[in-house]
Image 1 (cartoon, rainbow, N blue to C red):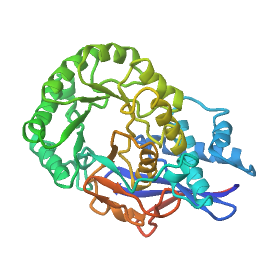
Image 2: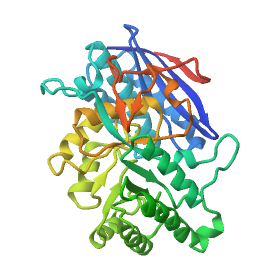
Image 3: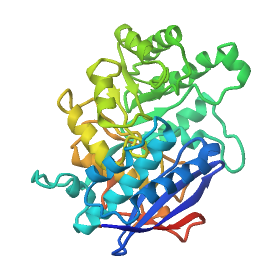
Length: 383
């Protein structure tokens, strides 16, 4: 397979949020898709430039599989989220092409030779955080009552687990005087008090704490029946502190969304830095790398792997196929209620019922972007 053309599109979603989609087209006119979305919009030009550089390296090359592609792209790899995102996006889009070339869905492609029966759906958990970020009309209510209403909405939609980021969105002075801690705990408390017997509550801290604060906050969360303590500190910068914290707490320590490569994730669990790791196919090396991560971690535990995916329908589709192929015991993340028409951004429309992602019978990741939705064509580059 040779690549002849790439396109990058931006689909506006909500306020500052958009989904950045990579389209790769082979010489046989087979199209592969992946998502390149990064939270840092100021680095977008550099991201697109890096993708172009990697694509030029592939010019004229016959690409046979992901292992070959990985070897080529990693030859001059640097440790940065831009490089991780660029390589992961290219690899995932090519995997989409590979599976379409073999005329099979992605979860079958990932398990070929294993005689596994593909599942028709995978369980999701509801990340309510993005629905509580500013909308096109400005900031939204982030009171404890608003958190409760959004969590209840997710429960009524059939989700058995919800995740929130209660320590986000405070004023700068509240971070300085640490009042954000009690404010965040108030939000979790109302969820626990009213919903703990109906749904499981997961908490993402977005690296808001130091070691001492992490220990105190986790104890309070655990007393509220919270057993998922995600990234109280940044694993990229605070691995030593996380290892100390893991020995001091009762709940599960979770994180690692921005790491790249199978060995990095294996090290996080094997060497007791984290209980559960969260590879993101946008950053970890792509769809097939995520599959390898899950397989290797399976030698340690069947419940230490849960894909990170607060992203768009293209990313969720690829992530769902990996989750299916691994028969993962832990559910897949899904950003709920961010926009009402999210399901229409892909064709066939994204199908989520009773907290489960329902697969199409289409080849590859099973969906393609709906270009009738508003979008900006950021890059067109022939090889």
